[in-house]
Length: 350
Ligand code: SAH
Ligand code: SF4
Picture 1 (cartoon, protein in one colour):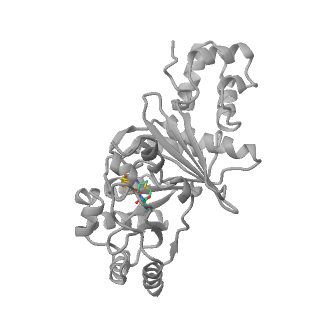
Picture 2 (cartoon, rainbow, N blue to C red):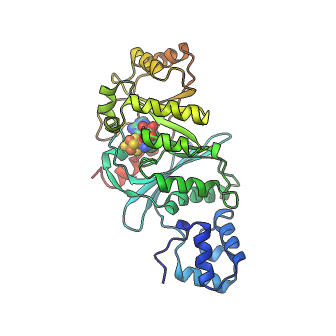
Picture 3 (tube, helix red, strand yellow):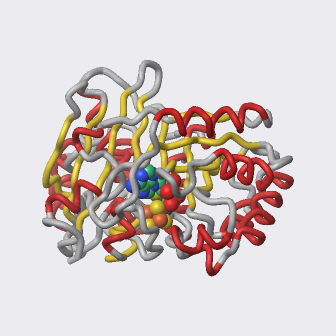
C-alpha cells in the first residue's frame, strides 16, 4: 500500500512507473497528468477520463495532495484571499491569492516557518518547522487555479514570497518551478514567476549558472552590514559585499532585471541618507526597487514609515534614475503579511 505517497510529489516518469506497476498502459499517465495539472482536479474521482475502476484503485493507493484548508479569509474589498493550510504532520502554511485588474497572483510558501529569523517577519519569528515537498509547493498553485476557475478566471502570476526562504529549500523549490512551467501540465511562463530570497548569495549564483528564467527578487532592507546584520541574520553569513557580487554576477549572466525589496521601517532604514546608500549599493545593476510599507508583527517593535518619509525615500531613488514602486498594501485587514495568519491562529509564535 502506497497511501502515504502524494501523487503531487511524483514527476511524470515516476508517475508512469507507478501506473505501469499497476499494469496500466502509458497513455494513462498522460491522462492523469492532464487531469491533475490542466484540469486541476480536486479529487481522483474527478479524473473522468480514467475508467472508474482505475480511479478507485488510485484513490485506495495514493493521496492527491497534502493540504487541508483550516481557515480562509477574504479582505473587505474581496481582492485578497488568504488561506491557512494544515499539513499531515500538523504544521501549517499560508497561501495568498491577490486579484488585480489584469493580474491574478498567488503568493506561495516554500517552508513551514523559516530558519532565517529576520526580526521584522512573522514567519521568521516562528522558526523553521520543515521544508515543503515539491507537491506541497505546487498544490498551493493548484488551489489558486481551482479557486479562480469557479469565477471563470485564470491565474496569471506566481510569487515565491509566502512563508519560508525558497533558496534554503532549493531543490524542492526548483523542482516545483519546473513542474509549474511544464508545458504538458500547467505551462506557466517562467517570466510570470518571481522567486524572492533574503540574500542567499551562493544560491543566487547557482540560480544564475543554471540559467533559470524566472524573475529574481532580493530582499535588501538595509544597505550597510551593521544594520542588515541586526535585521536579517543571514547577512552575517552572506554580507552585502558577497550578496551584491552575486547579484552582479546574476545580472551579467542572465541579463535580467533584479527586484530589490525594501520594507520601510520608521527611523530605522527610511532616511534620505539610507536611500542614498541604497542607490550607491545597487549602482549600475539593472534593477527595480519595491518599497514595501512594513506590516506590523507581534514581536518587532518597529513601525511603518510615515508618508512624508516614504515619498522622500522614493524621490532619492527617482533622482538617481532607479525605478522604484511603492507597493500597495493589500489585505491588511486579514493579516495578509507573511506568516501572520498562522501567528493569529496559534495565539502567537512558538
Ligand atoms: N524568504 C524570502 C521570501 C519570503 S518573505 C525573502 O525573505 O525574500 C517575502 C517578502 O516579505 C520579503 O521581501 C520580506 O523581507 C518581506 N517581509 C517579511 N516580513 C515583512 C513585514 N513585516 N513587513 C513588510 N515586509 C515583510
Ligand atoms: Fe524567512 Fe523571508 Fe521571513 Fe526572512 S523575511 S524570516 S527569509 S520568510
